[in-house]
Length: 260
Length: 343
Image (cartoon, rainbow over all chains, first blue to last red; front, side, top):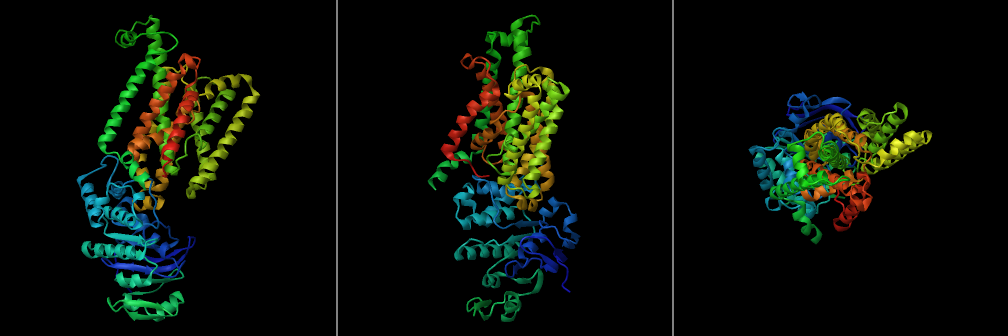
């Protein structure tokens, strides 16, 4: 039995979800660590992440945040502790990076208190941490794919939560931008102590950046642990049906998958 | 790329630029209002406007015209224009569709149907009596469009199709009812063109609470819309109760449109075009958008009502017709010049 963490899924089942269902899945997201969820297409990775962020209603079981069912908590109060960046979010045309990042402050604002010093501080810090200060006044559509994704991450950072969930943040980025973005996320995790959980497709990148890997298959956790424990020839054969060799990355020492 | 860089200044106005535009629109509205009080069928002078308010003589025909006819008409036009502008801004923001407008999404057709029922079955002729049934009709049409458009899985294209279908249905129903009675047709014909003739203070006083309530919903709605425009998932992640927010914003739209429709008829175009102009000035922050939409809507409506009184247009062109005559070319110009922003 794993010890309790701030964010857990307790035997959750999701019966009707696109693209995949969850089947009595149990997982704890380790506090302060960078967790990566991997698995084949339609194994329930995104559904799990969305369920953890209360975007996906669950049939049975509960998602627990700070000891209480997340669905029974005030959504604004949850949003001050947990931020999620869904896959491929969209923004109205002409929205500037700063205006986008400001919207991350929504759960801290109200009709009566629309702007405070804390808001200004959090927005400036988020822009700085993501290296977007120079681009703050540019509209999103004028940015490159990598910069745009950093802008969205800045928005999630401005929300100033202890837990950050990212659904495939590297989709449609080329390799250099994937590395750049994941390095940014890793640094944020190391420097601010935020708990990060994200879905990634690329196992080698997962192995390189994760502290903790959760491998899903058919809506259940197949196995979890450190990258070296999870990313093995045996597991990859079972989870992805992929015959492969796993060697130690000659530079970083993390597991590296070479498909057969 | 160059197009983007070129359009940056106009799309990202600072607070200064917004302040200047705000000042300009308030000034414009004051000037237009003065003209609206000054010009009409009966010639009056500038001095008489002043004296009508400072030293009112109950038997002076000019004073009576200014205070009892032109003033309510002016206030009606301001209220209708700003309500329609705000309703259009909320609707475009909520459906994330730059073509959304109370006319396209069936609300006006539903409210019109309600008015026809009022005229035909209850024999009403005073707009103040229409308002509840017009609101009911607008609400029914909006719910129908929402359900046909896919409920909470609605996408903009489906919503527009559902809106067109429901509008056509309600229009056909209204027309078939009108065929039954010549008398109803006469009242309806006058009302449907959209105008502010014969508006009295009592009408405005009846409708004012509705518009105030719509406004009270619209202001917090615009705050939430900023988050909602990033997509429903993102909004939920930011702690917005999406269903509740959409319901309240929808209610604000129906109330603002219903009140306007019962007062001045189904005025087309204002709700569609005003938010596009407001976006040019105020950027994509919905709070400013709502504000500027109200201002520009009022300006357009007062101008339309004023122009419609000019001898050039026969001296009595309905404001709704006039607004479409002005609005059409402006919309074409906007689309040709910058294209329509994706929301």
